[in-house]
Amino acid sequence: MLKLRQLFILASLTTAELLRQPICLLLTTACIVLTMAVPLITAHNIGESGRLARDSGLAFQLMLGLALAGYAACATLQRERQAGTLAAVLSKPVGRWTFFIAKFIGISTVILVFSLCGSLATLLAERVAMHYSTNAGYRIDYLTAAEVMACPVIACAIGAWANFRHKRAFSASALLALPLLITLVTAACSFVSREGQWHIASYQPQLQWPILAAALLVTFGLILLAAIALSLAVRLPLTPVVAICFGLLLLGLTADTLLGASSHPLGRILYNLTPNWQNFWVADAIAGGGTIPLVRIAQTALYTFLYTTGVLCLGGAAFQHAEAS
Image (cartoon, rainbow, N blue to C red; front, side, top):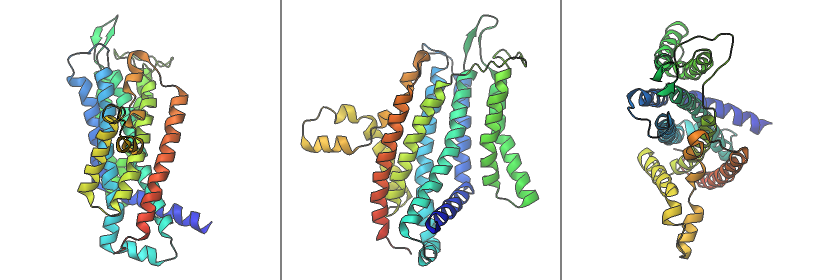
């Protein structure tokens, strides 16, 4: 019970510290704004209404989430090492494994907050995109777009008020308000049609719910990237960590082409060790009204758990011999 209590306290402190970092708020806001800007500036449907907005939103979630995972991993270890707090914590009866796993849980919590905002923004961006209506022809849902764009502004206002009135951290208050606001917009838009007509008596979301399943798989990939970044941050600074994670992402996306057909033993070993990011990027599966089977989600979740566990074991072993100051 003592270990679990230490794990919970350290994970909570890590989450609170990361939420206070302005870059977390900036990356989350950038994901929402960029995702919603795509349907507003798109002039063509490319064969399917809303597909460009949907794919772009998932891509923004993946790439900006990679940057967030790399920064959070390095900030939780290197900043505490430089400030001397790492040595102070480890001098107490706190095991290094407990400390390392708690850091990963804290980073994963922040990634979940980021992914929730990005997933709902992608869901709403597909609705905002130009769709054909028998009543109004091709039309963009400007009302929903305005509501989503207002969420970061309102969140910053809430953060400023909390900082002025209650002396709370501006970034943390604004970042925690963002998922609540965008969830309210998602619920409210279900009672308004794309043409701006209210239908209070009926629930007509006009949303492509399979997008959330695709975004969930992207979130699994971000959690795996967080484990890799945290393990690398034990020995490396921020820039190499992000560069290596980006390189692994590119290698994993092209592994089937570059290494899949290789008969050389070294090529087969690299192919088996490289994370298969195709498991997490399934934007084509929901094209044309397609869905993602629950079996595929369960298999990807198991793959993420096993690969993340292996990476954390290697990172934790390296952390056992790392300098605390």
